[in-house]
Image (spheres, rainbow, N blue to C red):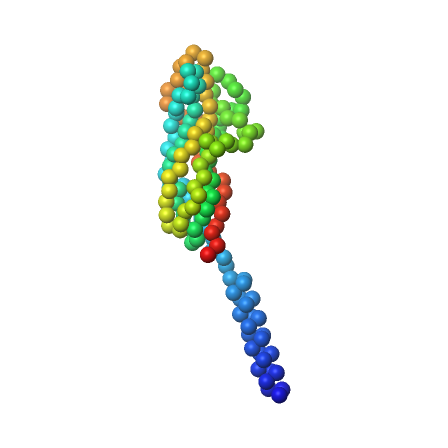
Length: 149
C-alpha cells in the first residue's frame, strides 16, 4: 500500500513540474517593422499643403498580428500656425485619415499602408513649399495585438 502511495505521489509531483515548465515557457512574440516608406506633398486648398505617407510593413515575428496601427510624425515641425513653416498640432488625437489600421498580418507577410496629413503648411501668397520636406519625418507603428494560437 505504501508503494502505491509513493508511486501516486511521485506521479503527481512529476505532473505538477511538467505543468509549471509548460506554463513558464516563453511566449512567442509578434514583431512588425517598416520596410518601405515614402512621403509626398499634396496641395489640399489654394494656400494649403499637407504631407502624406505610404509604404510597407512586414510581420517579422513568430505569430500573426492584428489591429496594426501605423501613423507618422514630423518631429522638427513647429506647433504654431505660421505662414511658410511646416507645423503640426501635437495636442489633438490623430484622426482616422492620419493613421492606417492593418486588420490582420500573418507571420512573414507584408502589407501596404497609406495615410494623410502628417504636417501642414500654408502660404498666403500661394507659393508652394517647392517639394522641400521638413526634417524629422517619421513613420511609427503605434500598436498591434498578437493572435494567440
